[in-house]
Image 1 (cartoon, each protein chain N blue to C red):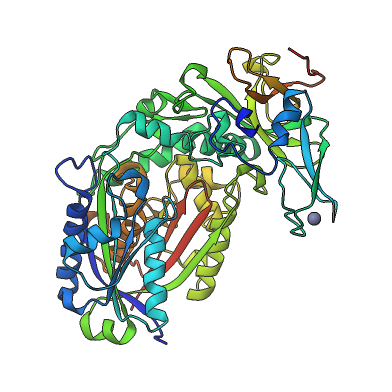
Image 2 (image 1 turned 120 degrees about the vertical axis):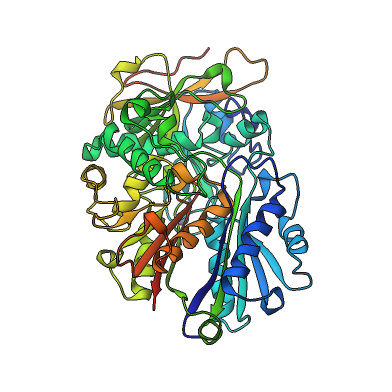
Length: 146
Length: 385
Ligand SMILES: [Zn+2]
């Protein structure tokens, strides 16, 4: 089900494909190595530290801080109707980073580096197929099942 | 093992929209010029290495086609690909083959046609420049990544939009004097500021332009170089390093760790420091990239790159002349050719053959060629006798 992830998905098959199923149900998951306990976000199947392939998912708090951002005006194929969109890179509370779009809870002029944000699971409502992603929202915004 | 590897021949075609020629025809122009410059014939070559990024060409497996058109069959050839640093990877593998004693004389050809693809094909490729699993799904583009770097650089160091545009103004100033450049026109601050938005804060005048083009250098082991050439330029420092593909795994967004590591290797191998470099070609795919390069290469302290250009320290007559061939910004960026073009330019400078763009007393020079958004970086230190 990793093909659910993203407006345009280029890499539908992965050992962490359950990430998208969790996301559809409102859970933002990182991965944890069962051998050494090292955690990753985005999740990865094979431990970066000890090379073990034995991992489990755990739920991230979604709490994050804005590292940098850009408003994309010139969009690639598949994203024309979304442009312009604002992409942010955030540092996650538990470690790791996420790259995502800003959601509707934040106005463009409110965006500043260092601000606290919430990474919130989202489902594309306009598409017939299941399509999921996560967005950067005002701190304290919680997931609402649509 | 040969002690040193020298550059004995230099050739360069005109960069631009080359709808008059195929990629192998572009390669031929640069190759023929390099052979003539070296004063040798094809039969003296042991091999060729081709630097190019295959997905832009209709022709698949490009090295074979180029090899045939250059008349080099049955000599060995192979293609190197590390995105925009493919040309420097070709130079490195040729250098390695000579250092290893396998070959004595090798031609390195960087060649690229980027205008064969239609705009929709380019836009589709643009969607896959980043890490495709976790980043491209959000519509990231090349400019978007450098925009993230720029925004963070502004935040941490107070770098300004004017300072970034000053990079573009300098590079166009010199590009106007380079007959091989795509844009041979100076630009103004007002015009740069008025250019269209691409990915904030970057605008059109922060971005380099795709181009078609080719460049060629001929490398030789020390003994053969001394026999053949009176003006050999030596590849004395060869650095090469990588950084994570994903920006999510980078330690920070204001420098390229691959560039810092490659520079340290190259300086150490050549036995020089950043202060010794008189002239450099750095990878200014975006204006912020040149500012980051000043810092990553140690031309100035971290965070002072914006001031460094504002104080004109990288013009001829400043601390170190940077991209006085116009850089990617004005010369154009035929991605596979770019690295070879950089080495060509610095070798010309060290030979004292750069004409009105000549840097006085240029004895030690440097190239800095970045692949992708810093996944790969190659730094060379070049020296004349
Ligand atoms: Zn582990």
